[in-house]
Length: 376
Image 1 (tube, rainbow, N blue to C red):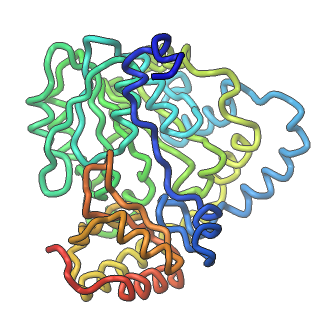
Image 2: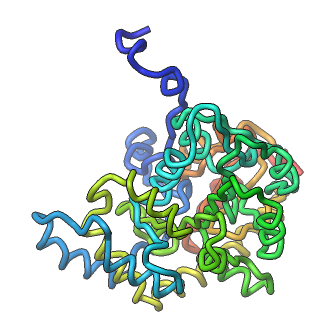
């Protein structure tokens, strides 16, 4: 044990660090081949051209501190979602907001509840706040809302729901969420993680499903904090811009724990411009919808049973150790996300939806490295 161990709280020493998707430069250096990255659910079409222009203009002011309150962006988002400005906070991505929310509501002796096979940041932020995380088994590769309700007790303060769920891509419909919230005790807040909102909303309209009443919950001041991000659909992952909407009183407490100047000026400018670029947004949505169908069709033809996805990725049970398969795919120039370790799905991979050419190369690589013995 190192010399600082006694100074660091046990809950911190016991934490497992968040392990991000494999950086493309690192994988290319190791394997000596050009990589296609389909492991982190980024927008394969890149950022909006309008956002690029806005960042170029904003570069001239990087010697100045940004607006720590992100006033302009908050006002724009409040108008877009028809909520009050004081019901909205901008943070460095939605993961940053999850950390702040946990530190706001949790402490030793309290607990949070979520599902197994959900976003791996939930355990990290909960335990870093000194609280217990209760994870209930999945049902049909998604959330078992009844089991989550049963796991709540007088010491529960947070429930984490990723909708769509990461990594399985499953959906909780608006009606199902309504029923769940009606059962929720008054002392519990739901962190409704809609990082993939844009993709889910688009796919839900195509499939005739009502997806989300999240903004209505905010307007009604329900015990819900809705998390959104510019990292996915808007292609601004590197800039780290996310936001949350919720009860004004709770948002005010959350804001007290937010670090000053946490979102930089380039991110602020790019996010504002990206909201104006409807052409790029719709192009991204159409590519995702069409390519999800292509990937699902070909994977089924190969003998896999991919879970129906409502996001920009697809969950695949492979029938073998996922880390080993992912390494073989990297040798063939494809980065995917093995869902081993904290993800809790040793034989599954998550594959981001790419461009038609990227997806074609992934399917070719998968055929090259597998033997045909698939789960399902």
